[in-house]
Amino acid sequence: MNHANNPVSAAGTLPLGDLTVNRLGFGAMRITGPDVWGEPKDRAAMRKVLVRAFEFGHNFIDTADSYGPEVSEILIAEALYPYPKQLVIGTKGGLTRPSRHRWDEDGRPEHLRRAVDGSLKRLRLECIDLYQFHAPDPKVPFAESVGTLAELQRAGKIRHLGLSNVSVRELGEARRIVPIVSVQNEYNLQNRASDDVLAACEKAGIAFIPWFPLGAGSALRPAKVKRVAARLGATSAQVAIAWLLARSPVMLPIPGTSSIAHLEENAAAAALKLAPPDLAALD
Ligand SMILES: NC(=O)c1ccc[n+]([C@@H]2O[C@H](COP(=O)([O-])OP(=O)(O)OC[C@H]3O[C@@H](n4cnc5c(N)ncnc54)[C@H](OP(=O)(O)O)[C@@H]3O)[C@@H](O)[C@H]2O)c1
Image (tube, rainbow, N blue to C red; front, side, top):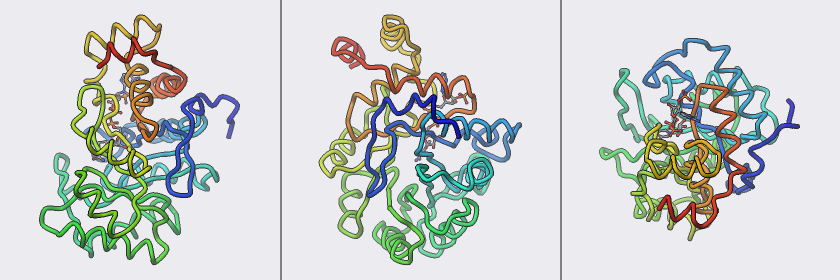
């Protein structure tokens, strides 16, 4: 693969346990059909997006068994297997998709064991570099779900464990059971409700992976974002990503797209530096 044009490396790197990734990843939720359900219209085009994402320097790709379901993981393997050494794939389990609009928690040990085996098979891996518990299940004690994933890690199926959609309290509880290398919560210019979790990640020295880094589009619309973008000759998406990168050294944004043009635009945000007046304008 051609690394000559690798704009993402301008974002710098960050550790995920003993692995190192560029601090701007790729979110592979948008490569499925509409509503993250079923097949995309053009599978070959989505495989091309994945290959280009890696070529641009996105050596962290985020996915989940529930995207499609299964479609995103299968496409990643089709596009990128055998995987380049520098590529780190983070997947997730703990949500099921009984139908298009349902995302149901299932943190039962028997489900998580099946989910990890399913992801290993679809991704054609013997060990998953980063396995994230997608969301706590209110019907199952959190410690039981996390303990099951710790067991699967001891069995050699998972290299590093991450959490998603958790509170500071849940992060602390999980860390008392097993080492955690990342937390993935919703976070963007428009939604900073996880500021406390971000601070906890900074303190713990672990990655914070903001999902909806563009607010699924909503972070691109405020006038203040457009004004800063116009002043810098950048796009609103680039400003939203650059703001995240500037917000914390543990931040690992994973913008998602199904378009090569957007991929290219987002990758270029790695080099966009916001000066103090820009940051103040976005506050
Ligand atoms: N842990 C969780 O619970 C959770 C929940 C949601 C998402 N995630 C993860 O987070 C990743 C990112 O979230 P996301 O993809 O939902 O939202 P996002 O990155 O905030 O926004 C993606 C949306 O914005 C559009 N977009 C992308 N680049 C753009 C650009 N430069 N200009 C204008 N529009 C642009 C995309 O459409 P186009 O396809 O047309 O570019 C897509 O509709 C996902 O891929 C997934 O891996 C995790």
